[in-house]
Image (cartoon, rainbow, N blue to C red; front, side, top):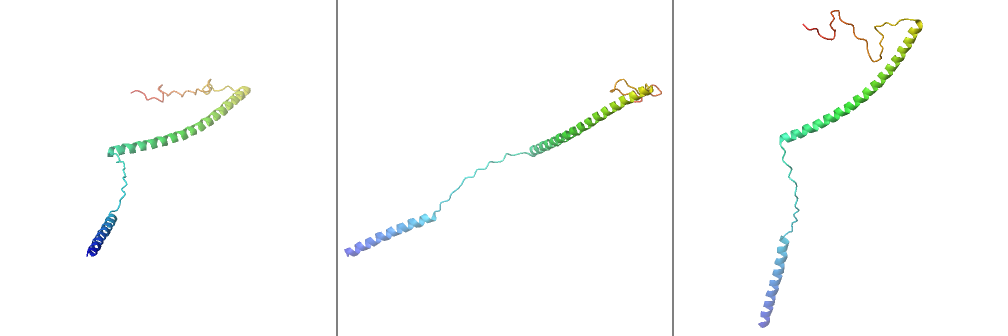
Length: 141
């Protein structure tokens, strides 16, 4: 009986150990380890409709100024070409005027005093109107 008692105690201790091992293993399987990654995003600032409209207007004005600047550069280039062409025409006309003056002098023709100017940069004045008032200004009532 003593040996049966010892055997029974041994079996009981073994059952308790096996049960303890089984419970510890099964409880650990029920727990899963979760990895939580924290993601912190910046909260965008609150913008009112007026602020968005002002920003849109500023972008529009920047585009307009860039477009205007590009157009002014092209106009400037065109004006330079026209000025060089006008300078060439002016030089040719000055040469023709000098040639005509030499021809008139050689032939003894007196130039018309109304069309002759002493300076190349001054133009003849417009004729006066019959009433003595300049045709470019309005007469007073």
